[in-house]
Image 1 (tube, rainbow, N blue to C red):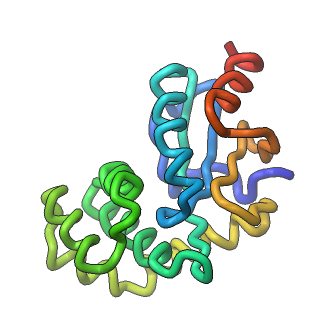
Image 2: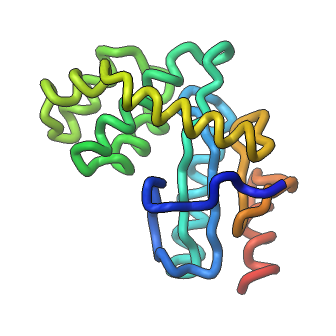
Image 3: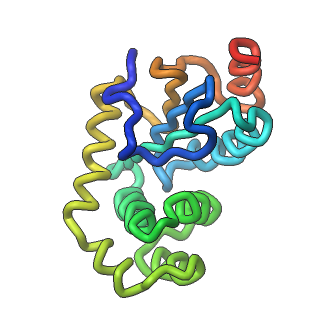
Length: 173
């Protein structure tokens, strides 16, 4: 299945924008599987360097993970202050504490403007961006987290251990 919509300048992109490998993750900050995938993706970034462009899209599974939507909104609120990836990492590294007071604590740690951050947490346009990413995942065939796309195509293999890295190295090294 293909990624819909394709990557654009509204996405959160880390790494070389012209990389030969475009890895998109649909993730949920409260999902334990996404938590396990987090250090694996960090390692893939380290191993592949400039060959990799990483994109993260929110896919909060609210019924299973009631704090996931607010955490995703917090990452978008941090993005408004240029700290998306810092908050992304903070959320995955502290995924057992995603209540509102913890999110404000993380924002403080990241030196965000707290008044603006709290206003953004309540901003419906920011929540709508998260929901739009969720719907793009549904259109792309995402039904669980994490789900990965490589160069626009859904990856159906294992991401655990070194499986995803080996797959990428076999095809692009």
